[in-house]
Length: 243
Image (cartoon, rainbow, N blue to C red; front, side, top):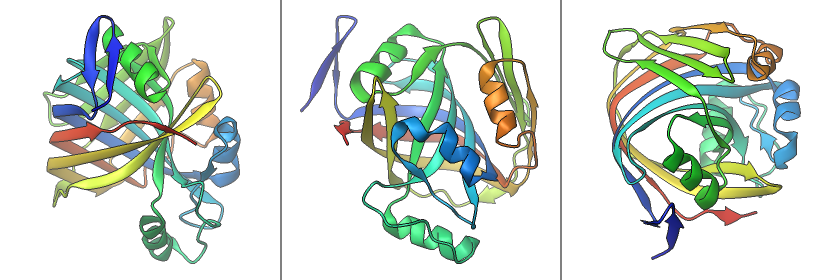
């Protein structure tokens, strides 16, 4: 069993999250713009339609886990694994089917958190691009809201309207990270419960932070392709492997 010493504490792999609440909004964006954003990683975005990629924004309340309790926000992109062929171009449903078969994963481009222990653990163990930020989560009301501020500047204000109940299934997929010139693959599993989803369903306001400018260059704010809320999920993160 792999172990990592973080701030004087042993962290064993796999790292487990026992309870978290997750809210996401996914957007169709120009593939060429998305490729430019993640070019530093050496990975390629997955095209679910010709010339279109998926950028997903997520905010998460980690209530109970091996890295303690914290809040997190993520800017991610659907990517094809390095060993996969060219992106499918036969329409959305066929493309998504091929992507699942080929093992498409999630590249984590920006990952602010609000606690120091998870920041050091995430960067050290997996190479996740974690950095400190102010993350204000408002999850008690029917509408779920996240406000992210970094360096005293507003990054974004994201509101998600829960949709209709859908079946939550255990999923195993790969997450990808890049830090200090190294791209890594991380096995990741989650078992969601209390899932609600809908087309659209997200309102976003961008601030004046450089990350907000980057999102605006991707075409945001715009109508979300789909939004989802997960009231309760467990997760497991395996050992990272350098590509």
